[in-house]
Image 1 (cartoon, each protein chain N blue to C red):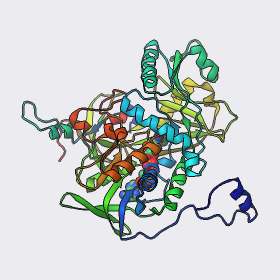
Image 2 (image 1 turned 30 degrees about the horizontal axis):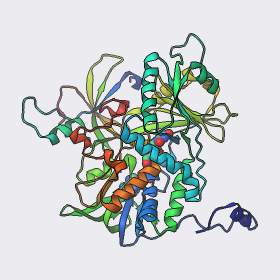
Image 3 (image 1 turned 180 degrees about the vertical axis):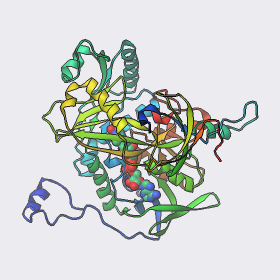
Image 4 (image 1 turned 60 degrees about the vertical axis):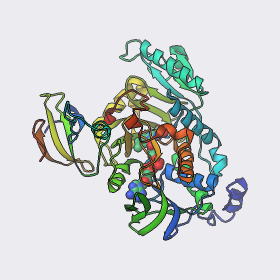
Length: 79
Length: 418
Ligand SMILES: Cc1cc2nc3c(=O)[nH]c(=O)nc-3n(C[C@H](O)[C@H](O)[C@H](O)COP(=O)(O)OP(=O)(O)OC[C@H]3O[C@@H](n4cnc5c(N)ncnc54)[C@H](O)[C@@H]3O)c2cc1C
């Protein structure tokens, strides 16, 4: 068990940057930069072990109970 | 409606205060209303009140899933101010300040508005410059602002730490003398009582679980107590905005985050104003009962928990003790949390939507209590006239698309650090 203080939050992990060099709409860009689902319940999000190994990880957490269901490395795809 | 006055108080004393009228009724929902407001917080109640008072629209229902005042309106630290730099925020909030000054008379309900002044402390020369700039912008918009030097601050807040070798010495501060606090529950109850007296149905314990939308138009809501029809629906659900947006297939520039606050045991008067720490996120005032009312950072990750975790509280109170060391001697009485509709530029949204008859009021972050009257007033206008008022024109939903952001702090889209 590590203290919560060691970790820092990085936001919604399902957000994907539109592909570089590809024609995209304003809406696609808005969805990337601003629009978020932010629902009650299971939420995939990024955390960094800032005061530790400094790795970024993906965590699936319940936003009402804080229960953690799954974790992934930053480069692993959410299935 | 029974008018509250010293005479009604004396009269009711003779019957041991057992014969006061109920402040609002408990009606069974009708099948249809002209306007349905979702959310019985400050903003929903104020909207219904101004719909009836300013626009003669009385066939209105407020639908509240719990009880009125159980959300953020009853959980906030009641700071009321208009010390903004951007015109849209400044003019909107200053319009609200005027409504605050008249609110107790207007509602015939003592909301205990206390314009005791707010002081934002500065801890560096750079911060003093920033405050000078903000103060000047405020004054250009007709808002009172005074730049205080270290000695002036010391006179007003002797309890702050003015010793020499501190990590964040106090250089001075920016004061808005007309800012202050009010009794938050009274604001909800005062608006509810007047709205009810003008014919608004306040329906509690009724959750909106879905919407009836067809051909791009809103027709009504589905609730835990049956379907209710309305051609116009206003969404005022603060921290629950994302949940209802999903039911409308809308994704909004909003995230839901948790903010905590706490009060200490009551002590004798030590602090006359609202004070904010400038080297972090901490603010404090003293309630009429003597408790020190304190708050600061968000918990820092999306949350619907409505109760906070200890690390943030410890962090916030460490800042408080750095600013006012005597706080370390106080016992904590209560802590609590509320879920905030954090917008991506820190400013709210009061607007129409792409669905005809559906109006949106959200994105209040941790500053929506002070906005209660102005938000209700402008939202009522937007709903009644089906167009935004000049005062809320800047609070459009599509500003995120056009780039006309109102990012007062210049923090960008990391809602959880704002
Ligand atoms: C700890 C804390 C401190 C704060 N301090 C300040 C401050 O000092 N100054 C300031 O200006 N602001 C402050 N705020 C922010 C302010 O409280 C909010 O921005 C404001 O109260 C939000 O508007 P409201 O009153 O309408 O929200 P709420 O009172 O939260 O009203 C929303 C209502 O919608 C209801 N609802 C939700 N979903 C549904 C549904 N599906 N169906 C029916 N009803 C539903 C909820 O039950 C709730 O009653 C603070 C907030 C917190 C939590």
